[in-house]
Image 1: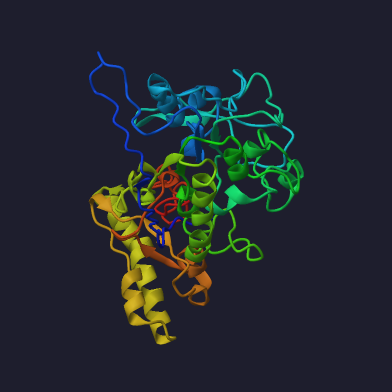
Image 2 (image 1 turned 180 degrees about the vertical axis):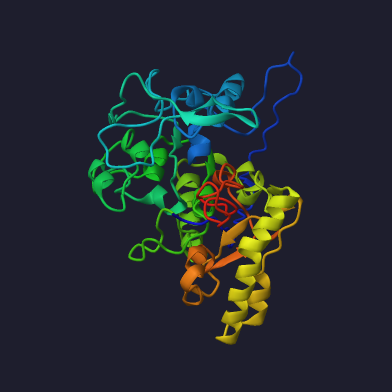
Length: 396
């Protein structure tokens, strides 16, 4: 179990830049669209899940055909744009793959009834009627090089499309790229290499989102792969991104003399609903419950903190950790903060039942609580107990 706390979010800004397009497409539908100086005959898009058409927590055909590059290509066709091929999933595929040792590739979510009038719907994965095998398509030429979960440094890795890398721990390959790598293998093709091989006349490069987002989705943990330095849940070091990104741009701008393209910016990931839906003070309490929680938890925890101060706990930290419960709808969620001193030694005898508070504090406005916390808030870990666990604590 990981208690829910968002310690920090790294905001990554890549300057939005249009590389000399000079495009003037007429807004008058009675005139022929004019591409200006841009050549849309071979348009390629390089990116992650946003580019691939990932939707409903999965990559499936409907999302792919409605990907933003596919929509752009439809418009480019009015101004000389050519065919736009994508590595489409089969019509019956719902997202997951069978036969690969990973749990990160799931079936798409749909809204299902819960029977709870307060939360009538909840997202659940589709159970596919036909298992979807991971079938590589080496040698086929595509225009959409969107690879879900890819970070900036993955785009130039020649092992990222190696099927054998899916079994490594942690995996060194990506099943979404294994599907359409032109040369799958330990020293095969790379995403950027495949894109450059298409000799694009116009491109969109939108990478870097996962360098921050995957870390934030995981609650901003530390490095989980110290050998590589950039594990799945890590935020990519600034130096790594700064070294990799110019190379991707150089590869694309040098792919064809005079080609043009767009470098897309990365938004602040903390503004998306996954981080803004659950308020930090989301616990409603009636007067009797507030009084009971104060008696069973807040007052007892207060005594434990006083004891910890005597044993060396910083009084300022103790002040951050003290709990107040009041009748109303805006009591803060209690969270476990791994930056706080572990005071478990103070929980002795009957107080051992409160050991879950060893690094606890009320959430503050600066904390970001993730969507999975929503169904946990206000639910007792053990029915009838007032001890915070899965109850007043938000967790994933």
